Image 1 (cartoon, helix red, strand yellow):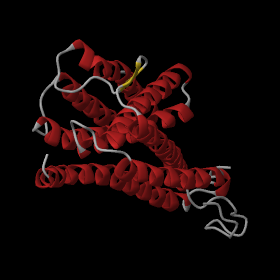
Image 2 (tube, rainbow over the protein chains, first blue to last red):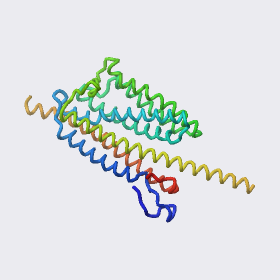
Image 3 (tube, rainbow over the protein chains, first blue to last red):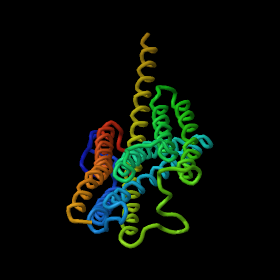
Image 4 (cartoon, chains in turn yellow, brown):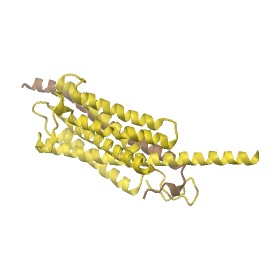
Length: 253
Length: 54
């Protein structure tokens, strides 16, 4: 949210007092409307499936969450690659922000998948190729975030994280192809280049899910990027203050 | 399928559906809230010229 009132830095402080801006506010409103439409179609208007019954409604949040987790991993890998190539802090923060949001969506994918598995397969979890590779992806994302949290020089930490970030892409490819390469309990993709296995309101509800959750993902990545950027500024400010204090001590002594 | 069987099946599936949607919507809401709060707290520590988003 942007405000014109005086901020903590005096009367001249007319900058935004949060990570929000006019653009993200509009995006936020559109996202909320899209999420409302998703609830309407996903839970009320779309029909139950002939075989799965109402359990199919989990698909409208599960499949978009999974897809967005892959998108987040790709964005992290792109940010990591550009950081390693050009030492761009901006891209490093893009990688960081998208990795955190990707981890969130991977967690959604795993939990909603388990909740879908129980009524359709009879179990919450099986160690089949899709579920195991998805769990590995979650561990890799947590590993990336753990590397980001290590107390080390910025360049060293960012470089190590970027290398882990690049490893996300082959893992996503394995997750995606796992249902083709191995015999698994998990079904093959509902949507593919050759067509869709669902039609009508069910297909529309799934597309609504993609739109609503993609908008949510974009909103979250933008805000998380800005938080990371602010953290950088605060850290840099603290470092500058510490150096100035040490220099002052040196002058006194 | 008799009405009682349909009801039994529906009541057996809906808790999983509801839980999945609550996880996703609740998780997104909680993450968005936490991110905005962090952003507001950090914004107070950063000079205005370094936090202009638009």
